[in-house]
Length: 377
Ligand code: DAH
Image (cartoon, rainbow, N blue to C red; front, side):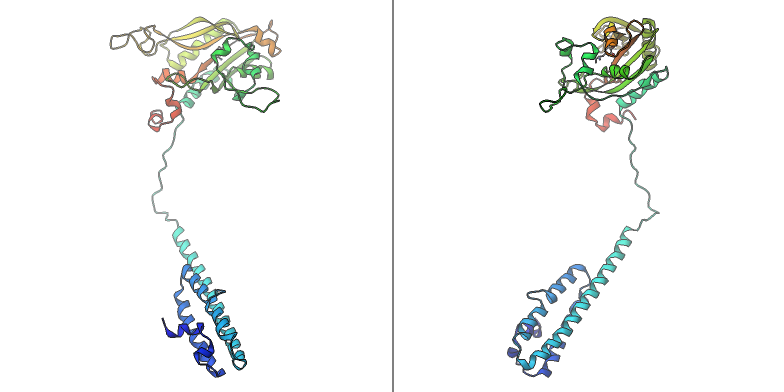
């Protein structure tokens, strides 16, 4: 260490200084040392160090001069020391501030250089996504029905038991509720009504009829939920499209014609269709709608010679439930059951997609593995 650096840690007496005229050369030395240091402080970390070394409140050079030179100085020296110290302090402070301004404007300049956009560089190619297969199937189904006069409506996924069950002619303790293991929402005690995740899109039949007078022709795409354990054909969330047509002159023929038209548009005109009697509380009569097996052409035989694995040799595949609206349902929405009639259907989009595209596990729709999604751009 330069021996002069130590001067500030000693008293003037210890340095052997007794005359006021010796003071200015002593301060000149310190000032020269500062000037040499501040030149080297050309970035923020170094600037910080220099500032602390010189202006630090406890052990900065100026604090030491105050403690070791000024305070114990003899009365003869005190004036000279005080004056030189003030001068030095003014010099140090102004240089340190000057230096800060220089560093800041310098770093701004380099930030500008860094951020300058080079327009000659090629752009980043962002891969373009596509609609999920289920969304595509929704769209296909909607297009077909819209083309024959249906409109699309959507409804809440959180429903009351009234809309999900009662108004659809499914009173409490009706065995059909067993088929629809339901997610109920945890509500605080005293909530006005229980709430559940809709188990089907059928509640929108009620909501639509409550809102509008016949004629009604709507389809309702949406998500539905059931407490099913996941396997290749079950998922706790899946997708349906509900259909409802109510007017004063709708016949069973309109019903079968509409559904057959849809199926042929969706699967191709080669498929055959059939109805089987079924049961739903909100339709009477109710049917299960089948289509000739898309995989074996309805023969029940696989191309390899054995039995078709998809229809298990039956030649038919069950597609969805449907029926003529049960008059009891009209009672819940103040329609005159004597004057109106109509049909309804509810189909699973996941099932339609699996059949149309030969997918044998419903879970792939929810895993969103891009290797699957990319097959349906
Ligand atoms: N809501 C029924 C279900 O999810 C499906 C259904 C059947 C809907 C017959 C209908 C219908 O509108 O008429 O199991």
